Every structure is written in C-alpha cells, then in structure tokens.
Amino acid sequence: MTQFIIRRLLLALPTLIGASFLVFWSIRLVPGDPALALAGELATPEYIAQVREKLGLDQPILIQYANYIGNVLQGDMGRSVRSGIPVLEEIQIRLPRTLLLASISLIVSSVFGIAIGVTSATKPNSWFDGGSMIFALLGVSMPIFWLGLMLMIFFSVLLPQWFGLPGPVLPPTGSGTWQHLVMPVIALAANSMALQARMTRACMLEVLQQDYIRTARAKGQQERLVIYRHGLRNALLPIVTVLGLQFGTLLGGAVLTETVFAWPGIGRLLVDAIAFRDYPIVQGAVLVIATGFVLTNLFVDILYAYLDPRIRYA
Amino acid sequence: MATLTRTTKKLYDRPVQRSRTYTWLKRLLRKPTAIVGLLIVLAFLVIALTAPWISPHNYDLADFTNARRGPSAVYPLGNDELGRDMLSRLFHGARISLTLGLTSVAIGLLIGVPLGILSGYFGGTLNLLIMSAVDIMLAFPSILLAIMLVAFLGPSLQNAMLAIGILSIPVYTRLVRSSTLTTKEELFIEAARALGASHLTILWRHILPNVLAPVIVQSTLQMAVAIQAAAALGFLGLGAPPDVPEWGNMLQKGRTYIFSAPHIVLYPGLATMLVVFGFSLLGDGLRDVLDPRLNRD
Image 1 (tube, rainbow over the protein chains, first blue to last red):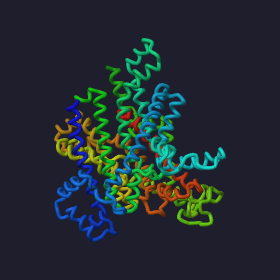
Image 2 (image 1 turned 180 degrees about the vertical axis):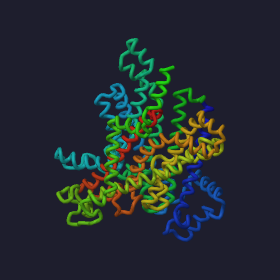
Image 3 (image 1 turned 135 degrees about the vertical axis):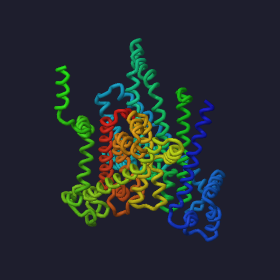
Image 4 (image 1 turned 30 degrees about the horizontal axis):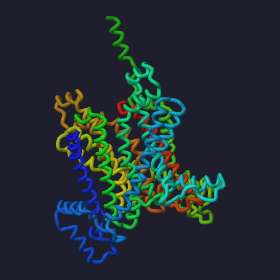
C-alpha cells in the first residue's frame, strides 16, 4: 500500500507541475507587457520595475517558471492589483468558505443521489425509476447559475406570495448564517446529485444481477440487507470515484454559484478579479483550485486502492 | 448439392443490403427518449436556421415604453430590460448557441481525434507526451480552464468558442486513444500491414473509421457540454459583447431585475436547459445504438 501511495504521488507531480506551468504562462496571453499586466495600470513605476525584476523577463522561460514556483512555495503569489493585499492572504480568507459550501453540497448530493439511485435500481422501469431518471437528466442539463436564480425567485417572491409572508423565506445573497447556505447548496448539489443518482442506478443494476445476490436471497436474507449489505457495498467502488471527482467539479462550479449568491468564496474572488483585470489574483485562485482538484483525485485513487486491493497490483 | 446451389443463388438474388446508417437510424428511432432528444435538437436547429424570418420583431429594437414588461399579445414572452422582444432574442440566441457549440466541438474534434489516434497507434514517447498534456488539461475542474483562458485572452465570442473547444480536446484524445488501442490489435490491421500499407493508409482507412462511433456519440454529448459552458461564460460576462442576444448574456443582464421582471431570466435558462437536455437524450440514444460497449458509463 505504501508503495502504491508513493507511486501515485510521483505520478501526480508532473500533472501539478504542468498545471502550474500553464497558470504561470497564461499571463503571457494578455496583450502587452506581462509586468504591467501583473502590476496593474495604476501601479507606480517603481512597483512595475520591481515586478519586472521578479519576473526576470530577460531570463529563459524555464528559469522564470522555477522562480515563480519558488515564490509560490514560499507563500508569495504577488499582490492584488486592486487592493494591494498579498494574494495568499486573500485566498486564505476565501478558501475555507468555498470548502464549506463544496463539502456540504457533496454530502447533500451523495446522500440524496445514492438513495435515489438505489431506489431506482431496485424498482427498474417503475414510475419512480422513470421519473427520477428524467429528473436526473434535467438536473444535469440545467445551468447551475440559472437554477440559483430560479431558487431566488422561488424563495424570495413566490413562496412569500403564496403564503402571504412579509419577506423572503431565505436570504437571497450573502453569508453568515445557515440560512445563507441553503440556496447555494441546493444549486451546487443538484447537478452532482443527478450524476450520482444515474451512476448509482447503473452500478446497482449490474450488481443486483450477480450470483451472490441470488444466493443471499435464496438463504432468506431480508431484502433490505440484500440491497444494502450485499448490493450497495459492492456497487460503492465506482460510486466513490465519481464522488471524489465531483468534489473537484463542485469546487469549479462554486465559481458560478458564488457569483449568483454573492457568496464570498474563492470563486467570487476569481470572477471579481477578472472584471478588474487583477491577474495575480486570477492566477492564484486558479492555481489553488486546480491543485485542490489534483489532490482530491489523488486521494480518491488512494482510497480506491484501499477499498479494492486488486487495484494496488494492477 | 441442389440445395446448396439454391442457397447460393438466393444469397446472390438478395436485394442490396441497407446501409449501416439506415440500420442505426432505425434502431435509434425505436427508443422513445432518443426520439424526444432528436425532435428537440431538430426544433432548435430549425429555429436557429430560420431565426431572422420567424422572429416576430427585430431582436435589437429597443422599445423603452415596454421595458421589463411581462408577456403580452404583441410580445408573447415579454420584453427585456431595454424593451426588446424576448422571443426574437431567444430565437437569435439559438443561432449563437448552436454555432458556438458546433465550432467548439469541431475544434475539439479536429485536434483531439488525431492526437488520440497518434497516441494510441504509435505509443512510446509520443503517447507519453500527449497523455501528459491531456492530464494537465484535465487538472482544471469543469469550466475553470475556459474561464482562465478567456480571462487572459480577453472576453469575446471567438475566445469563448476557442476556450470551450480547447476544453474538449482531452475528452476526445482519451476516448479515441483507447479505441485505437483495441482496434490496432485487430487482424485486419495486421493484414493491411502485411500488404505493405503505409502508416498513413492504416490510420486513415482502417483505424479512423473504426473509432468514429464513440466519437459521434461523444460529439453529441459534447454539444450539450459546450452550450452549457458557453452560457456559463456568458453569464460571467466572459462571452459575447453585452448587446448580443446570447442566452448566458441575457441571464446576466436580466439578473439585476430578477425580482421585478423574473421572465427575463426564466426563458433563456429554460432554452439552454431544453437544448442541452435534447442533446443529452440524443447522445444517450446514439450510444446505445452505435456503441453498446459504452453502455454502462
């Protein structure tokens, strides 16, 4: 197992290096002087010179990249063009809020997604199955930011109207209380819940055809135990993989959800930074999200190998 | 002996076999969900093609007296924040969305498929290089890579198409590589090689046609992904210029008036969902017909 973990870690390293190189290089897509782009148009000539020196534009690109990574590893991701605050500080404030949103969404989507998938698989071709699968496909088709907007209308306009309430049922934007979390979580979780329901259903249908399920039923095992202990446990492996990948996708989707609900996480930070051409923040936020995604995938792979020993030796 | 001759004769007398496309289409039309998907996609195609003629009003004409007004007899879906006709804008939006989807899928196809074939067929260092690049691109979750690219390239419709196209390259490369790996072990490839066929001939005549089925399926599903991603970029203000009736754009503009004029954000999202739903249903149906192996994904 240790060997597997080490091997997998070594495999993730080139991906991380490549992804960070892409982020590092991307500033060169901006027309004009990268130093000016990173320092901002309003910066003093001294600061621009300082940034230029730090970029080392006269040096070979690989040396520039090495310097960039060296700085990042020491916690120096540059300064925000707009506020002058170090990028790392901004991210340290914002990241936990995004992680909170993504984690709760992941829990909500897995609980409901797996439950719906299992129920559908145990009653294939029933009205529940058909209905929930159409719903699942609609859920995947829906733009999540649009779902967010619809939720806002529902909770802030329609519900109060129907029940004659004085104000919105849930606060439409902002953060701070658990009520602020409800709508962003629904919006963010819907997509992933739909995917997991479809995935769980497919895996369960296959597992339920196996001989050991028939054996379990033949020996008089309760149906509930057959489904959960013999069925779901064996179907869980691929589900876990999807679940792990979903966490990364949720981190990415948070960019949209946070924009809709003005949730002050890293996604909102990114979008605001783009509007103000605050490139150091854009680079920092993208780098952090991508790194998080790679590490989650790594963790999923290791978990997968732990759950299924066959994979370690493949 | 007599029976044998008769069978042979019968075989020769049989009418020309129906083409493969015909068989596929027939099998596809046996699935109700696929038919629904096909109808939705066709409907949007017709709308996109005929938008200038079926639009009841000029999509760009501002009628300030009717700004943010809900559905009425003259304006069936109401007016947007500048009083422009929602329905006409939606029709033109279909044009933009489908063009955007097709272009970005084409970009992904034209770059991703050759890379996948080369990687699978030749293996070795080339495979390692290509697959590392693919892994790096897949290190960015969902549309984050597109957001980053457009952020640096500058927001425009062209850059959005380009970014979404780039986003789909690794999907094709992975898919095609794995089918190439299985195809190149087939006997007919060995036969072609024994006959002295060049690599190019083998790739073009023997490998490519055999990896196309999953590519067609993926392209249909990828249309759904691209249209959704385009709407997301538009919503973040990273797509078309503000006055262009792109669905994501319309959502972004209408957001300000969400509580006073919810119809402005209702319809563009509904349209996006419907067309994405159509392509997904069609893609699922095609997968069952064209590529039974992929059924479980």
